[in-house]
Image 1 (cartoon, helix red, strand yellow):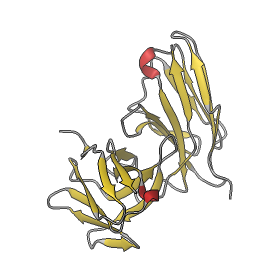
Image 2 (cartoon, one colour):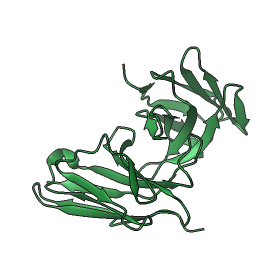
Image 3 (tube, helix red, strand yellow):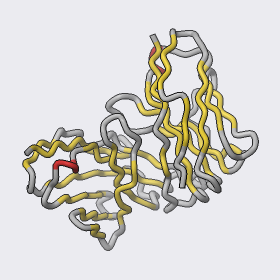
Image 4 (cartoon, helix red, strand yellow):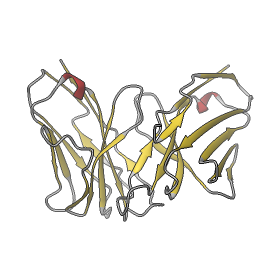
Length: 112
Length: 115
């Protein structure tokens, strides 16, 4: 089983739609969880951290289920500018190394 | 505040040649990371430095890859000799202290093509 698994997509959705991405991770000792966004031919940038209590940032909502080792990202009222690849990331799985382990990413295209 | 700087932005070489990449992290960031991102994949950590010491290089192919951060600031990553499968974007990232919740900031990357 891969360390971090995501559906690669692509997800093609119309403007204004709601879209959800899911991610599973294999290491139950993982400490921290994030969603990064990567635009085409650009570097990854932190979108939001993910907490067990769930967290929301505007149109974006992230959820973590530690028991199921499952992370989700919900985007409401999609905008054209949301088109990007969304990377699910976990950290803290290596003792003292604090390294990030990335999924392959899910590609989103928001269509006019 | 200046971001993570990397150079060159693009490099094309033939297999068996050598190549070096440079990274200057955000000022004051103690932790520096080098990642390899192959097309269609997520970034994969190659090496992590805390100041000038190596914290984790378990995924660095040490027969051909080397990296250093001698003064605990900027860093170089070298490939010698390069193989076709080394074609990828090499991303440098830095963070303040390397704890689990530390935000990593990525540079623009160096896109390497090996012919």
